[in-house]
Length: 267
Image 1: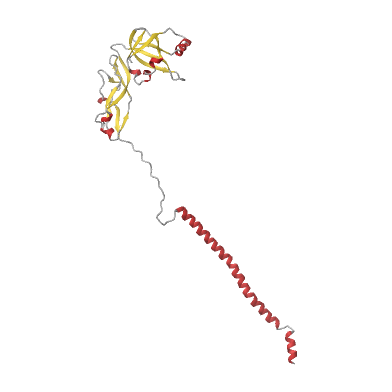
Image 2: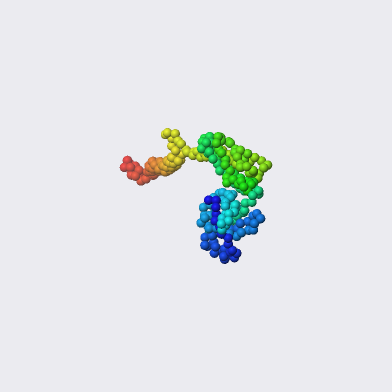
């Protein structure tokens, strides 16, 4: 849709403009050339779809102001900070013989004919828009970049892009890159290191538990040895004590009266 209908407006106060917006209209202004500026308004419903397109600010449209056609170019759109709805538009008249500096969007074609992309390459867009100096009568809607026969590592520069007549980039000191066909990026996850044990071997945790068990067993055996030593000493004492008592008894019997009685009987 290249024709937009608009009406002149006489609203000047903030209250009148807010009332206009609440009624579904967007206030706007038309300026440029030798004609006077005109305050206009457009229905928001008519602009709802085209105002969101990427080419809205670089595409020439016919503005029908109460039956009078004007070739204009949308230059700026302001939005409400809360609702994010458009609340004002600036239109500039297109004057024949003049030139304009515009940012024109880039469009890529024949991606399916690119050998580099078929091999898994990635299209790296360096510039989504290119600033061009264009005559008012020949403003392109988009810059077309043909990706046919592009291999991995190809850099598409502005010199290889076909531009309309008398349309030139504003950057003239170098042949800048618009896009590249880059090699695919492969993300390699680090390998997980798992502890593996040979057949018949005890895992590290099990070995530690076994070692703890062995230490416990050694401690138990040591405890048994320590507990056995006193018992051995006791048995030794028990075996030696009777012998000592008998020896003491034999030595003490020599001086007892029993021996005296035996002596008298003999006499």
